Length: 83
Image 1 (cartoon, helix red, strand yellow):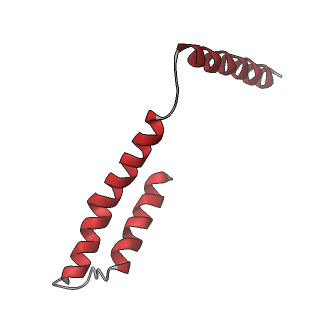
Image 2 (cartoon, rainbow, N blue to C red):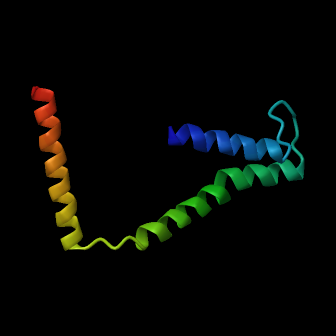
Image 3 (cartoon, one colour):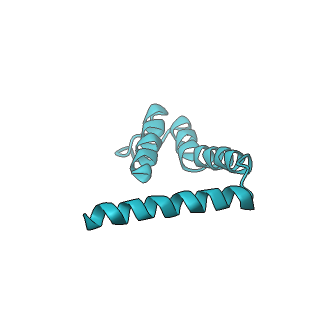
């Protein structure tokens, strides 16, 4: 699903800059849009995601809480499937 959304956004950006797939030659502006949608925009979003990941305070104590919650959820799912 994320790939489809990313691809659609990329095509939207390229189209907004005037990229025409049928044209034999592209304008300089459409090439800027192509470069933006293929390299710069994804790079920006990866860097943004890295900032959020770096801000996530995961330590061993928090990971233990996550493990316990996952075990409880797993037990509940198995009990529901057995019923």
